[in-house]
Image 1 (cartoon, rainbow, N blue to C red):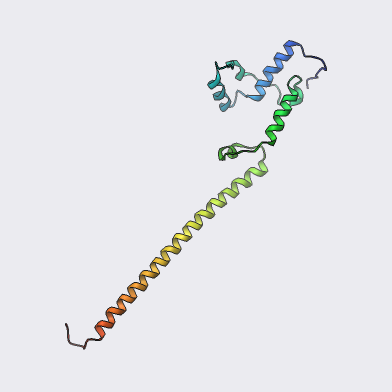
Image 2: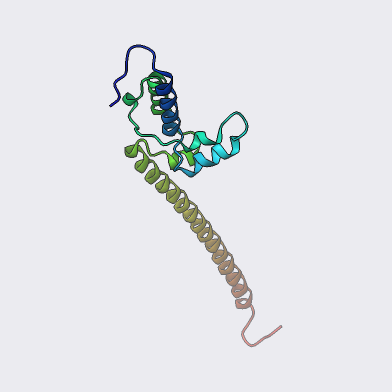
Length: 154
């Protein structure tokens, strides 16, 4: 662990810590960070800023940027995903992630099952109506032929 002095950091230590902070915030091993840097190179961001290694992910190992890193960490922990894609990629709270997606799958299957049952019920009603109509049509045809005497054909 780096021991922080109470006084100002030497310029070399400050610059070194700034580079480590960039490596911590924007890991060069992650493709979405690389794409983010590639879009912004030349627009006020140096291309080498995205290639900085981070020697530590512990906030206590940083002196100059510790308070700001703690603020960022607190804000990150207090934020919640807003879009479905953010929910899918957010792995901060595993105990909430799995139940959320299981509940979503159950909801989708329930809605799908409800739609299928409504379709099945409606086809059953239509089939029952058609059979009633065809039976009544047969009964009316049978009753009209029954009223004529046997052997006489019209």
